[in-house]
Image (cartoon, rainbow, N blue to C red; front, side):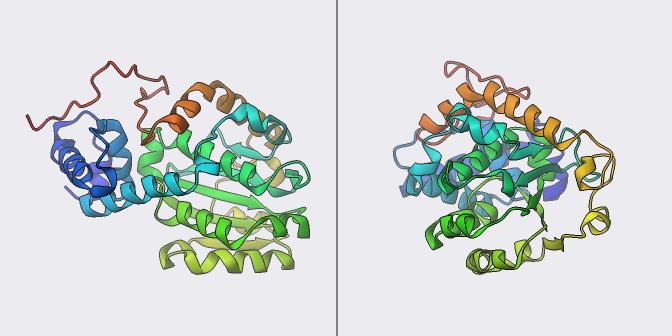
Length: 295
């Protein structure tokens, strides 16, 4: 079976056992992870699916993820939705309730709802990381990835001044090689001319594959956006027939708040390996999370 076919195999299938065991063995042999004693099956499968079960690439992604967390504690160690509730309540982020026709999760970031006087770029980035951690536990999202719409209406110089070269590099790392999610598309709408200098900082750090998935739609975006997303899933504000953007934002805010305990456990864990059930329930640490064993 090839990688995409293996991604469709259920988590507990014996067909995945050799890949999971191989990645676990390679990871635990790494000098970077010398203090780690084990990884759960579900945690490793996230990285395998993100790289179509290529163990070598999955190992690289896993090591990059662990390195990114260590080098970005100002972001990764504080995953508390309640700490950014004001930003969330401003309808900054929506994860649409319906997936697109390929099965991808669709996210909408409304940059104009972010007031730089109230919230730093680091706090805004935490919202993205919290969302990514939650949706990366979803089996279908592991398989089909994410597509993101950035609505840049309201982007100002105050926003631009918050994005330093260091932060731009960290953003590009998450998009390309430091987080176990497949980025299937990045769509920019309402982008002003003075957004381009910020984009120019991020672009050099992105691999060609990601660059080819970036689409700029401008202010007259309804027609072009409908070429990528079915109107049935998009909010009316984006030319669709789905739930309103405010409703979608509030629903996702509620979901993040319900996931506060899980997110805080992920942030506090040395490797972020917190086992969860398919419906997002945290599995007790006493429960065996290695179904596949090499004996």
